[in-house]
Length: 194
Image 1 (cartoon, helix red, strand yellow):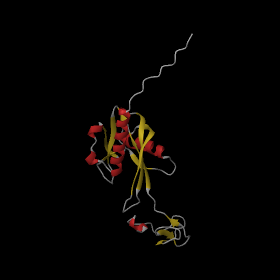
Image 2 (cartoon, one colour):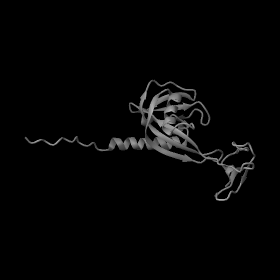
Image 3 (cartoon, helix red, strand yellow):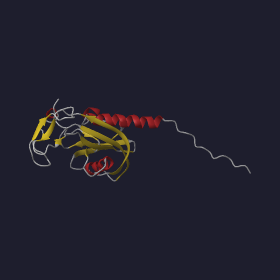
């Protein structure tokens, strides 16, 4: 399988020197790579990193309907590509603010999900639980609407991506496990003799 199998329109020029990129076998590599004819730099086509956040308030989770392609009109939680100068947690919190106007802290990790894409670089999605959401919901330019859903009302057939489904299922499982976990009785301090 060649690198062009992963990208329908692979880059043609080196981002470092502008030389032409050619696909060829490189020593110590297990597959053909794009290599600059001029500077010999290998141009790797790697997955894109997406950070997302599942926000819960009052027992309901917030989903938004996408106003952009791919999957225009489908439901997802706030998520988007990481920027070069931020952590996954910062990216997830930024996406919440941009897409639904909430200030939220990225809490525990829900999961990490990956999927290859035959016509573009694959994605690696890192999803967090949102903690302490503040403010009213304000729709950003990437959302048609946002709505709070009870867990039983999640629109499973209209979710944006497989990774959206996987993360929501893991979030629901973790949420249920937390609710089932027996509560420990409070420990009483030992009596002091006197």
